[in-house]
Amino acid sequence: MKQNVLTEVEYNNYKKFERILNYVEVLRKKLTIERKKFNILDWGCGRGENVIWLRDLGYNAFGVEINSNYIENGSYLLKKKGYDKKILDITENKGKTKFSDGFFHFVFSKHVFEHVKILKPVIEEIRRITKRDCFNYHRFPAKRRVIEGHLKMPLINQFSNHQLIKFFIHFFMNLGIDPKWKEFEDNNKRDKVCFYFHYLHDHVFYRSYDEVYDLLRSFNFKVFFDIIYLRRFRKIFQFFKSFIDFLIIKFIQINILSIKK
Image 1 (tube, rainbow, N blue to C red):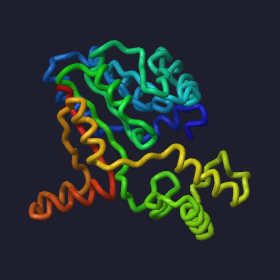
Image 2: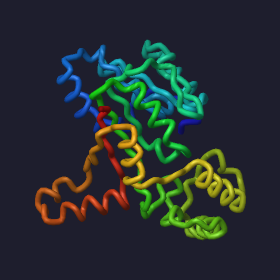
Image 3: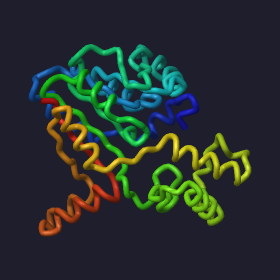
């Protein structure tokens, strides 16, 4: 999808990252800042869907992305809506951005950390551009997620042996489990197996909650785990709260709120 120009229909159907609004508004009201002066950054913005959405809501939102093609594909809708295309910008491989120290009140990422091979420079840059006592929010898949989120195949992210991974990719494709990415639709099965394997090997780097927590703490962030799933059940089964949190962190999805101190 990101390889195509963002249309208004796609934008309207895109699932916006509404979870962050609770924290955005809590912080904005605490700081008594108008929306148009409240600076938000989407780190790994893709074509800028969430940036456009936040701009439409009145926030001073920006996005950074490592893939220039994604930004170009989002610029058409930005222009159509009357926004300056410069609000989406390229970030370097080492995570450097053009923004001044402490420019942002809120920095967030959604399913980006698992695509960053070396996370430390990114966290360092996010800290630099975040105002003191302001918020970051990051969502990324759990390291031991049962269904791998990109190929939609069970357990293949749990193996380290390359040949074994390729075997199971081929096995699941024979069962009809295939992400069917358009860029590979004309390739034979053998080539697809190689493409899928190299995508996982070269572009996906799963991390545990503890790994990210420790890294954020090393940069003097105060870190909180934001629980979303099964919230209703947690109120009923308080006795199992810790166990449910453990299952979510290990096998489903991680949502971290951090505050720069």
